[in-house]
Length: 171
Ligand code: 4NP
Image (tube, rainbow, N blue to C red; front, top):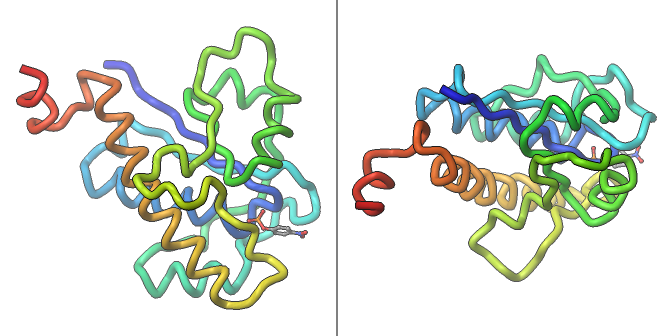
């Protein structure tokens, strides 16, 4: 059975991508797919390397049952393109930085997280770092909704990961 790997990328790797990492990992675990789907996160900027997630991010995520305490910031690098099937950016700036470092012949998916969202009013997860509390809850709302769409997309793309409902509707 083929496994899948997903890397979430933002700027600092202390707010948005660790949130997506923990939320998606939790969804993967609740569907019994931990052995099949590998999840990680990284940043394009190096200010917080080795740091734990932002306290505001971690506290809000904990209120919704997500544990970010083991995560530490790291930089995305070229090797990630040979390791991850999905490299998923939070905003357009992250995406263009990833495109600039993407090796020719990368045959995974380079995309925005909100490409997997059912809501169409925004395409980016806004950077909450210098804003108020509302920015952090918006990140969590957007990430939860889009991660659910991402998991459905991945399940739909691999027969061995499909749910019984997916299989029925394909018959
Ligand atoms: P993130 O947020 O990209 O969601 O982790 C940021 C964290 C730190 C900084 C910018 C954005 N910073 O400029 O230090």
